[in-house]
Image 1: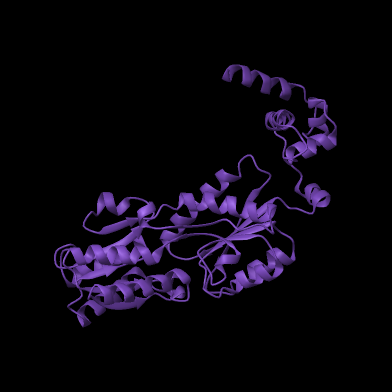
Image 2: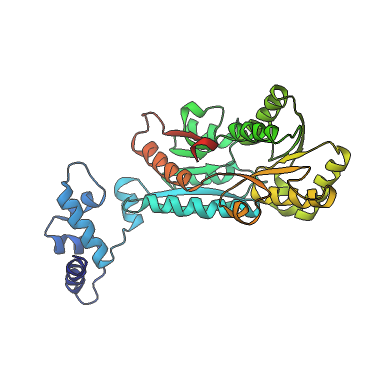
Length: 351
């Protein structure tokens, strides 16, 4: 069957005229359909049959047809572009972004959409890239993360009624598409298990507290500390430090200083693998062996610590489903602007 399909592909490619570039007219000639029918088939128009769509798309793939985005935009007013806004932060977010980009791109295969990645420095004005995309018509939808409770980007996009999806939740979460990991549940789960291990005093290495997920972690720390009779302390990592102004050694020194200031601390909870490793470095300098008189608990996106540092306790956060869901959610927001937004919250028990 594969050999037959390959032969058919070669037949279509062989029927290209000398010097001919694959265009809608080329697809129309090879398929026998009108140009308008070919165009609508490629756009998945509901009035075009599946057999016609499949044939046209097969021919397009066989001859290497690439839509002219300028032409698509003139005809439909759409760019067929989804913009992914990525603030540049620490090393683990780079791992997160590679997973997210791969899963979003995979979900767009077979659709009209193309992914455009827009990096920017999160310490700057996060609204500017969003405004630039919307006001210049550079994309049909936006995916973004590092969401704040009253995120100005979310407020702006809601006001403009521009399709978007977020990795994280804002205070207006009922009105927009999102995928989120339940960081409140993550901290509660870690606290219960640390309590079961005999720990009683926890230090939280919090992400920037301007962000929703950091506030969720802090809220859980406070609640669990009270309910489980555990003392709690917090070190916050401001966003500019995550972006490289603070070296791992400087962060480890700050943690070590906190451990010396409060020697009764017997557990550290971190939000990322780099923070967890840095915490372990500080613990080993001040208190000795991790897992002996003090535990370190962190999240990781890949089972690195679970395999190579089992003394560091971990919760796995699978980022791949996040990208897949966000790709679907933003397409849904474009296709059904007045419909209910797609939303999903997963916790440690769902991983």
